[in-house]
Every structure is written in structure tokens, then in C-alpha cells.
Image 1 (tube, helix red, strand yellow):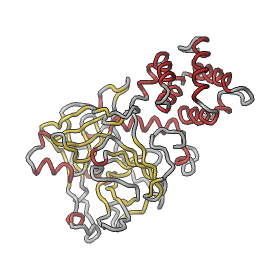
Image 2 (cartoon, rainbow, N blue to C red):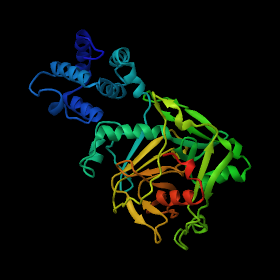
Image 3 (spheres, rainbow, N blue to C red):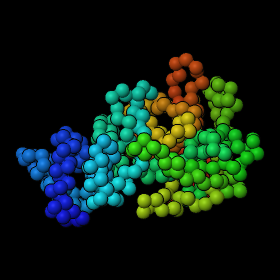
Image 4 (tube, rainbow, N blue to C red):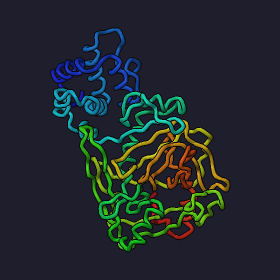
Length: 374
């Protein structure tokens, strides 16, 4: 046993019995631990309250009580009595669940009407399991929490310009067309990255932490193509000198900060090409319209590469302010830097990003590999 006494287990089981149906219990256990209730924790043929008591004891033995209770805390905002009991016995569970990323679940660019809007809500596994049968939901969720700490809103004097993400202890990757707004205005010194800007479960917003750029500003970068600016992205196709990225240096090593007891960290740029078949899922963590962080998940996303492989196209929806967002597979492998949408006003067919391995190759070639974290 861990923190809970026998009396604690009895009292908490009674409260949980009053707010969780049997279906809820199974879904919450699976979403928070990655294990099935009846195969991993308790016998099936018993009343629900004794079942919950047995579950709590089993979770205590495995050291995962906080994971489960933190999940209950997030998903029962209308039960202050339940939340107060969890906060009293397991404050660390509350700390883990304090922040939340909104989820936009999509299929081929069309929002799923019945999908949850919470990135760790019950039912998310139905979007994941058909494509990746061996995916561990708990590992997937933990990776999302880490990425949440590493993505930032890029802003100038309080005005949102786009999205970026840490790629080293003090370096952020975003689009050149985001950075050049400050550069052309002569205000690179006022450009900053706001981390931890998220919506809280109570509906309020955490303003997060603003970190300004170092005096060096951009270490490395290349513009978008003239054809993309003109709204005709394939004529001519972008070259390796038109990758639309800016590698920016921050004034502090925010990637080494402690967040919830662990280093914030950064996202490593892959060295190899990851094959993406047509209709593969794509995830984009972004600050659309400058709003608190949002996860867009499309289960039928990939369209394919452009004519010379300098862009990858997908159907996952984005908005202005999403420029510079990291683009992931369902396994959280980084594959692209989002930068552009189909210029057609009517019936647009794609969004697109720059393949991340091309950006890494160019950064290394330009002599800035040491700015990238391991």
C-alpha cells in the first residue's frame, strides 16, 4: 500500500461509486493506465463499490493511483466533493491534471461531431487503436504531456504571430515568415516565445511564461518560395533554399527548466526520412489564432509529397497562428514543420509542411548542429 489507509480507501471508493458508472470506470482505468480493468486489476463478478476498493488497493500496489485519480479529477469538474477528496489525499494527481490541451479530432479534414474535446478524454483510443494496434495509450499520453511543455506561441509585443517549438535547450524552430514580421519591423528584440499557454479544466487560461529572444535573434533560416507567396505553390516548386524556417535563440535555457519535477526538454530533429503512406494519421500541436494550445488530430490525413519532395501535404486543419507548429505521426514522431495552406478560397484540398529532415540537413550544413539538442 502507498498513501491510502484502509479508511481512505473505503471513503474514496464510496465517493467514486457515486460518480462513476461501470462503463466510466473501465474507460477511466484504460485511459489513465493503459490497462484493462478486469484483466489487470479486479474480478468482474462483484458489486461496483467493492470493485473500486479492490482497484484502489491494486493501484496503490503498482504506484499508479495518482494517474487514475488525476484523470477522475479532470473529468469530474461538476463534483467538487470528489475533487476535494482527491486533492486532499493526492495533491500530485491534481498537479499533473491542472493543464489541458483542447482536441480537434478530424477525419480527412472533417471534424468528428461526436469526438471528445479533451486531449486525454475517454474514447481517444478509438482514434488511435485502428491504425496502431500496438500503441500503448499511457505512453502516448505521457508523450503528449511532454510535447505540451515544449511548444510555444511566438508573439511580438503581446500579439500572436505563430507557433514554435523547442529543438534545443535555448533554441526554437518556427517559420521564416513568422520571424520576418519582427525582422522587417526592426523589432527582433521584442520577439518572444510564450510557453505553457493552455486552457485549464475550470475554463480559465494559464498565461504561461514569456521568454524573449537572445540578442542574436535568428541563428539560421531560409524563406518560403516566391511561388507560395503568389498563391501558386507548385510553379515553380520550392528549392532547398526555400524551406521557410527560422532557428531562433532564446535569452535563457528554458529547455532545462524544471516543470512538474522534470526538465521541460525539447524535440529532437530526426536524421532520417519517415515513410508516410497516403491517408496516414497526422497530429499538429498548435496555437491557432493565437489561442491556448490545441491538438488537431486527423485519422485520415496524409495526401503526399509535392513534385520534388520539398513539401508534405495533409488534410489536418489549421488556422492563422498555426504557422511553425510541429507535425507528428500518431506515434509522436516529428515529420514536418507546418507552414502553409492551399491558397484556393473555395474547396481547399490540403495544408502543407516542410519535411523536418530537410530542415535538419540544412541546419547541419550551415554549421548550427550544436544549437540542436541531442
